[in-house]
Length: 144
Image 1: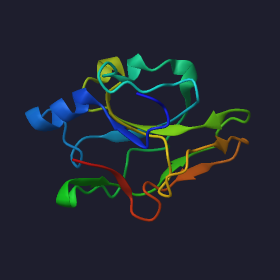
Image 2 (image 1 turned 45 degrees about the vertical axis):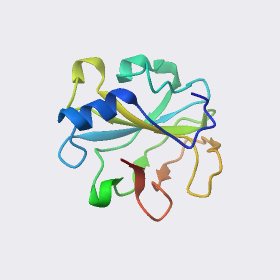
Image 3 (image 1 turned 90 degrees about the vertical axis):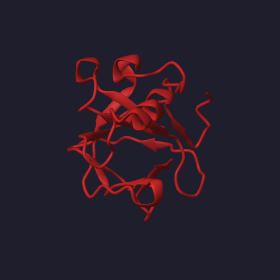
Image 4 (image 1 turned 180 degrees about the horizontal axis):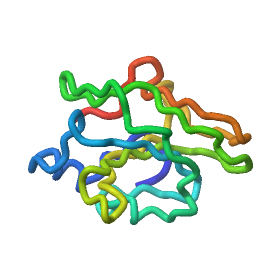
């Protein structure tokens, strides 16, 4: 998969939703900010351990809050990445279910590489907080 894609829903996540091992609104889901060296692969990346640790620029400060799955759309509140070290560029965000396969860093769910206007992320880090608003004002991460 090319990094230009708006959203990648990993194959193993789809499998987990269908076999019941993933539960978006009940499991502990966290967000990670990633750099330009990470190229998502929907068919081969299953766990956070499949991502080069050097490409994880920051972790969200807490598990996703105010999650919902109405009409098959996975939504949450904003995610704050606190005091993100300066000198890197965030180009996307990963959702990881740490309830499932935690020994492997958690199950990858999706990668989001563009904002709600379809523009690629290009967030230069300055040492300040980054607040990511999924789907702009909608809270939308992905739909099934």
